[in-house]
Length: 107
Length: 120
Image (cartoon, rainbow over all chains, first blue to last red; front, side, top):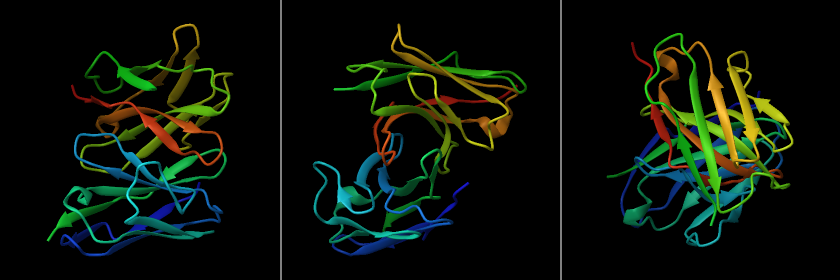
């Protein structure tokens, strides 16, 4: 199984800040890394797919990078609606697995 | 617009079987480009993939749950189902059904999720 190590597990920031979340895979997953945003009581919502591609309608302040085992997710100029929990997710051709999540809170 | 809806009988007692169905509307479960999945989330915790099924019957289960999980597809009803046997309190979670693309496993449709408590 491929394990995903996501950090930090929580993050306090202010509106306008830039924040970065990382995910590390236990094996090479090429570019098959997706990022989701989840708000309380809701299903996750796709933000970035294939490591760096913004889903349709997602603001350009969100970005992702990386390949192989190390990936980064960045939000530039945080907006009030961005405070949520973020998860990375990998696919190895058979199984899926998720990072532990990062709860982004208002400072 | 694709819509997924989980349904099930509600709370489950320890040692019993958890059964859920996902009804797909607005699209066909026989899509050649997608897998259908169950993903769960214990209260206040992260996401855990349970298993995935293709309409033809190809199935993949999370190795940690494989001995207790069975998934199936009913194309005539545009539904897929989950059975999880011998449940314990650790199986208490919100269970989501979802659809992802075969290539890259991008999960672009989720059900709203249903909380299944395991309690005596």
